[in-house]
Length: 314
Image (cartoon, rainbow, N blue to C red; front, side, top):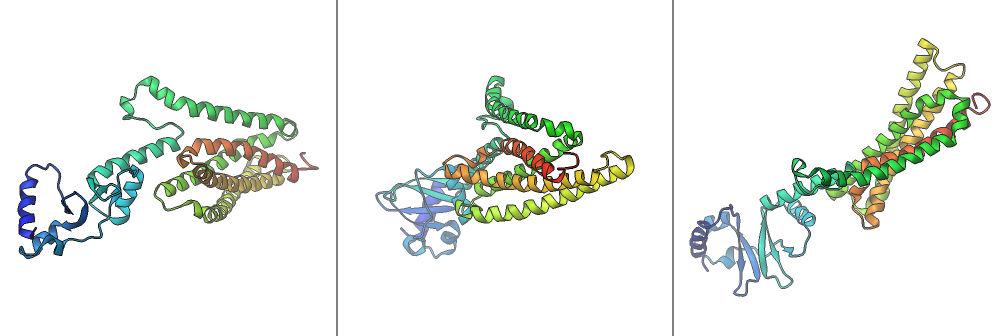
């Protein structure tokens, strides 16, 4: 077929198409894919040349069983407007356009965000989901997180004697556990999104852990300095924390460093563990990480308190 014949054929074919087409795929008599030619090349090439002279044979294709997420990454990696779908013998089965894949990307991103928030993915727009279905989607994770927080109450009970001897320690429990949970939620969200975009793979786990260790130490030190300054300032202004205020401030500062480092490590490690086990990393939702760090954060806090305050308040 010549270029002029191809242009005439495409002109007739375009009348029946609603979508804009950017490429023409060349097939043989058995519908096997041979190559691709862009409309630009067709319009700028002399009409007496054959399609075989104009077409490119190095066509980027997708197998018919490729999942939607992998297909979207193929579009992004090669910056294409269309990708042909072929079977094992290179028979062309259809094409997927960029418009099609945008809907898929939006759907995948919405699902990941909902999972990160601690719910099952919704199958319809928010206002169209029946109330009972909405409750079912959210109740499971909420119950799991509630049971997890019960371990926090158990940990508090375990340290009841320490709290009774040094009531001032109880004042900083919300501060400690919320800081650890927040740092863990940040880390897990960043790693989950990086995995979804394929910026991070399983083999990168050690690089991620090293970065999060350094990040956790730095962030912990920043918050420790703020916490230390706040306690010292309140002591100067209101004498709020007794004679051993500096040891209390030191306990809070060291605990913040430890808890925030643990939060960043836990938040960045859980998505890798889930991926290795074959689960969706987005299941390591921010509320789940925060709950895990709440329990362990209390243990870190009171362990540091026992070491720093031994012989004084404890």
